Every structure is written in C-alpha cells, then in structure tokens.
Image (tube, rainbow, N blue to C red; front, side, top):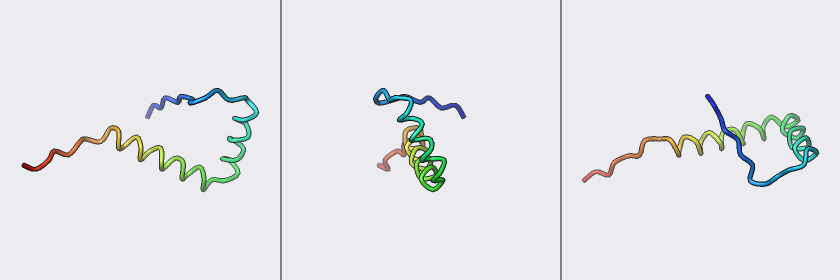
Length: 53
C-alpha cells in the first residue's frame, strides 16, 4: 500500500524527533493513531451505499 504524507505546518527537526521518540516508547499510542488513520482512509474510499427507494 502506498501512502502520501503531507504536513499541515512546518516543523523543526527536533520536534519531529521528539514525536518519533514518543511513538517508539508508547506502542499503544502508535496503534491508536494507525487505526484512526486507517478508518479515515476506509471512509474516504469505501463505496457509497445507495438509498433504497
């Protein structure tokens, strides 16, 4: 699966390193973020259900 990451704001390298260190030390947080991102992707690309008439 190919992902495209985009930033909502520019960050300093030190900020990115802090975030990565926090995620590495807390796998539960990483799993929660991953599930939220997957759910958002599935909602975007899931086929829309047609209304019953």
